[in-house]
Image (cartoon, one colour):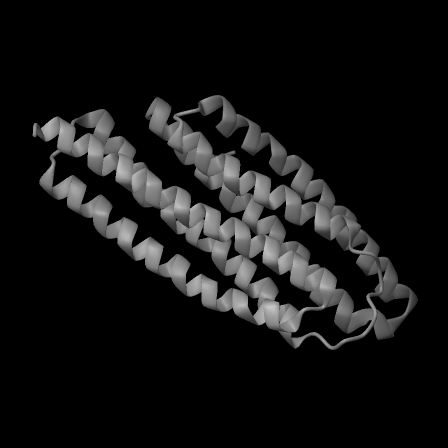
Length: 217
């Protein structure tokens, strides 16, 4: 088998692992939102266990990237693709961390009725999953246009976060007893907003892979 063929097969396997890691984090985010809405403390707690698998994926992919770079001696464009994957896994790992943080909050929250409906937070969760999926797909498919779409979606995420924050601040002002839960829900929203930021980072790395220029948005 030629060196080029070996490289292509290892790169394809690397992308499969990236997709698997991404899909796991998507499920973790979904579970976090489901646990929050349903007050499912055990589901919230279980997300931390899934996060350990994300960490294992990160280590395995990092090793594979280093092995490809050291053994295959890829040409410039191939080197950039592998090094881009190496940089992206840090952000993908953070998707899982933020989902686990939400799960931890759900596990420790008391069982009081929510002080507001969770419509906007749920919308943030759905948007976070979309941004996570499409950011990684943009890299897998070498799709710079899709990366641009992910970056544009961050404005929608920021708008939702501001809406949630404004509502919670008003509720706390009206009744100080809303303070503890208001802060907890604010943290949930902040974790989802951060997932959006990390998805933008992944999209930026996709654009770097395609253009050779790393630009922050």
